[in-house]
Length: 234
Image (cartoon, rainbow, N blue to C red; front, side, top):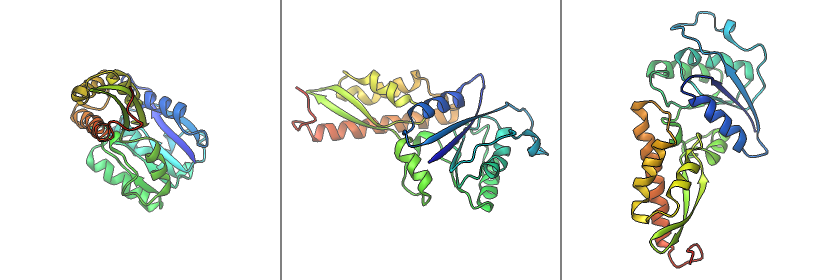
C-alpha cells in the first residue's frame, strides 16, 4: 500500500510527531511518503491550486493530519492531485475541523469516488464498519489501541502492544503500567496517556483517554480469564 501523510509543522507538534511515528513503524511493505504543508492562516482559500505542492506523490491512501481549517480546505485538491482511492482524515481538533468543513470535505471527496473515514478521535479508529480495504488495512495496524497483558500474580509482569494508537502513545503507556497492580492499571494508563502527552484539543482529549483506559480494561479482563495458562509468568 502506498500511503501519503499530509501534515504541518506547528508549535503544538501533533501532526509532525504522528507522521514521524507512522513512517517509522509502518509495515515494511507499505510505501510511506510525507508531505509537509505550510501553516496558512486564511479563513477562506479562493484559489487552492496556488497553495498545492508542485509535486505530489501518487498514492493509494492519503492521511491528512489537519490542525488548521486552511489545510482542511485543500484536502480535496490534494487528494485529486495524488490520485488517492481513499482518504483518512482524523478529527482531533474540532476548531480546525468544524462540522461544516467535515461535511464539505466528505462531499467533495465522494464526488471524486474517494472513500472517506473521519475518526474522532483518531485513536478510536477500528477496521469495523469500513468497506474500503485500504482504510481497514490501516486500521488493523494503527487506531484503537489493543494490549496483551502477561500476569504475574496480581501484577503486570509484561505488557505488549498489539495495536498502537497512531501517535505512538500506546507504547509509552505500556511501559508506564508494566509492573503495576492489575487493579490500578486502568487508572495509571489514563495518567500515562496524559503524560505522553496526548496532543488532541481539550474537547477531545478526555475521549481519547477513555479509549486507552477501555483498552487496558479489556486486556486486564483477558489476562485474569487466562490466569494459570501459558501467558501467565511465574
